[in-house]
Picture: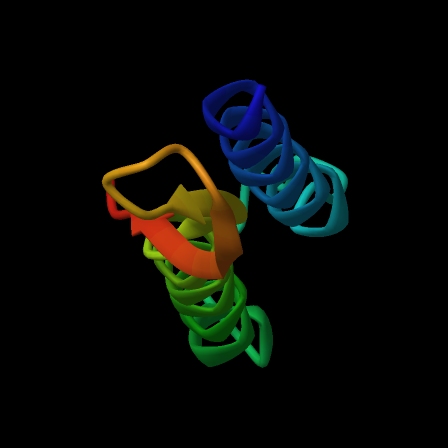
Length: 81
């Protein structure tokens, strides 16, 4: 579930960046104007957001028992992906 969420956030970031960078086509030549750096910043922000979400660890509480089967508490266990 977490991988699907991470992929959806990354796709949304890329789609938003592409939609924000579109403009009318002009035959005047290739000019970035003010959009060049901001397009790069948007892509970098999307990559960093996807990397931060991808590094998230799934943690849960697991019950612990002694050798006689008596409950002695719980422990936090994390699965890192």
